[in-house]
Image (cartoon, rainbow, N blue to C red; front, side):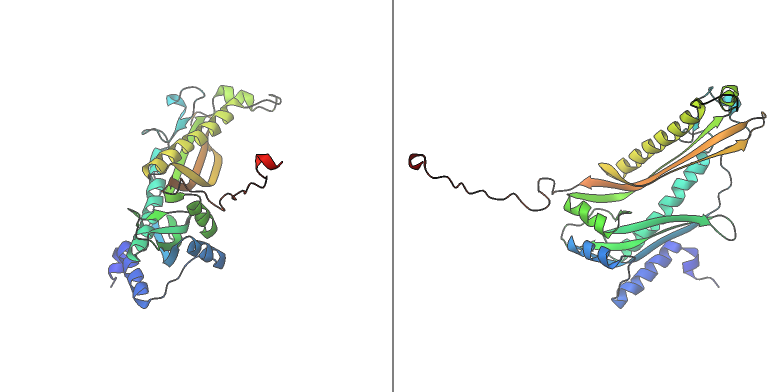
Length: 290
């Protein structure tokens, strides 16, 4: 008979972290150098945290051919509600937020203030679907000032320490995902024929430009929603593929994914990081003694 852990992954995480806390021993995903760096800026590791989920991804919102509904030469973007691939992008966001939220819940159960070194992975699940995981180390500040909510960050120990010393704090993982689809119209096919010679393929340039620009826009919005003033980017990925079209041509699809950590200034912006200026003592004698 399946217990409550099988039915509720969040409850299972809270139970695991409670057992770990009761034992008084913490684990982490930090190297020795990362551990020392985190400790040096006033944070203590309290335990390793994990968020995981398996999603069935079937309906993408893309079918047949984009050509009849597309303005000539202008890619469709998944950020538009009814655009091709919009449902797929929505589930990709949902999956990432789910596993990050579960890792943050484990951090909260351990009494931590945030998660550092959070790594996200996705892979095919053997029985079907896609497995998403988020693994990191929960840390707690040695301070009376507590964050309003648990932060998450991809930054490792040393980079996290540099951020704190510089007067910045992480506020959360941020994502920007965009899928752009472009119909291979006659103009595009003419530019890619072997007889076309050496020239820029305008359609392909627009496809990847639109996808990257839209992903950057979504990343900035996500960072702002996290309360961040900016984003420290971890990864920028671009994949381009073709798919057959019912009109006898091909649709071209570009998927851009940006990931990073949103950051915000805190009360040290008036302080200098590093050594202060040297005091200079004047050595010349009084004006009457030459």
